[in-house]
Image (tube, rainbow, N blue to C red):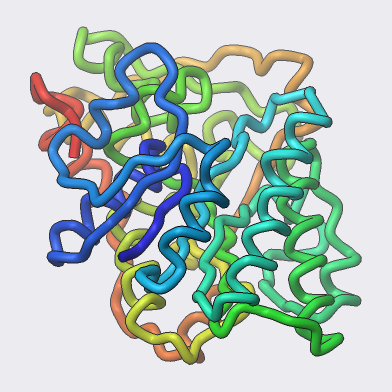
Length: 327
């Protein structure tokens, strides 16, 4: 059995879909709260669903049956300001799960984030050397909490302290795709643009507030969620691979490219208008990200990554444009 924390969330539920599709037994720990988040899991059979307060109790009772723990659960909003809640959920729980996996010999794959790179001034190289990690300056509380655990995990390994037999921290870049609908303002730009484009309106993007980037040319490494689940599945099948790894495509594309791809998928003429970026975001905004993917390639991952046009096209036509948009 594989346990996925945050398994009802965006990336987590896509992973559940991929793993159950392979015939694997999957348990999920998450909070559904009110709303339609449950629909992310509605198509799939689960071995168990565990409320987060009972997670360690469940782990202790099923230690012999657990093949791996994939820790996707976190407070992931880049605008969150409750530091105590973020530390409890994103750092302290991760430390607890690390120790449990080390004690019971269970592989641990966890979600880190490209938000750890801050404004990119120190680059986007997933170098695990403590000196390299110390140069990174996340721009928000979420990114800092993920960076803090990355640094903690690396220290445990370098100091030869107890560690899971396989440990992997995945620095997810800008992931988009089905099952993100519950995320509200934190949904991908594709999901935000779709209703307007479908209604025949122009796509609306933020203006640039830096002279070196034209409006719409702010760029990110956009990665389709299906590619992310394929990497995780590969890691589960290759338990000898451990470390910190970027998970992007290795290519930076502009938000204007993204908008054009969405409009093309709907057969619309490309029309884009620009609106000022909220002042509260301007000092915490990443204008450019591009994952260095060499370490994952060197570890043996050979599959390709979906192009922006193909990924956006699949998402728009096969999910967003359908009555049932869930995977």
